[in-house]
Image (tube, rainbow, N blue to C red):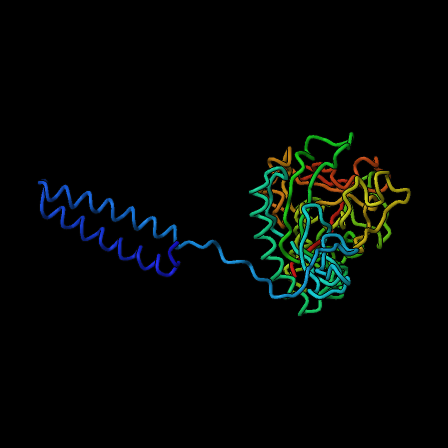
Length: 378
């Protein structure tokens, strides 16, 4: 067996000889000498190929710059893991970051992975893997910046006196849509699909209240919410209802002007991601409807399964297959004929408050059950 270095050198020489023989054969022409030179070039290139095979010693071994056996151990927060010694269980590698396709929002220390959204069918393995890899790169950079800034999941954000209180939500991966076995699901909740939330954002801890909306109406000369005989509570701390998509858009634009912060309505994907808070059940409270008028989830997002149903920043689509663009819009589209409503108000049927439930509200219509909450990028 040839030495690998010698075999490499021999292959180079034989390739050079092959080139010389071919050039000579062309110059000599189609005679006996030309045929001999051509046959010699074939023999030479075969020898060169053999030498290349002999020079190949296999791929270099992967070297990890960390001694000792390691294993991945999932810790309490879903989607987060750390590398530990197999022998003594001590944490040598530090916290790692990653998300399963069903992971909840990012962990409290901002160290886990994954609001425009990248989406794909959860059954398409290679496509989802590449998208997940990209999302992981994006989220790792985002996580690093958020840790430096001291932002953590569940933190409160309040940008001005009249601004609603927001709660911080991290990036990650969401299986959006109908939960398997949910017999109350509608066609618009299917198919279930894998969605990536690549950036940190903040969403209203509660729905915008009537008092907050009236402050906007007074400052802009806009009419107070009115649904006629269907009007709900006039408690200033209750969620505002009887507002159209245009009303919600006007409020967000006004709040952006007075605060200097670019507020918007949450994208539909962001709303479900934040509302689930890592929960893959039908409701925040599990598989059964909540027994209280409204509940707060694990990240501090309140007013779920009660209070008011909520407009989100998406035009209505019949199925998830139609919402690849609409579901990621982060403001109410003025061209929508109907907008998406998520969750349910107190007193509405519990099946409307399921975390995957979605319905429509015509763009010019106001409902005594529908309000909204706001969001912004971080």
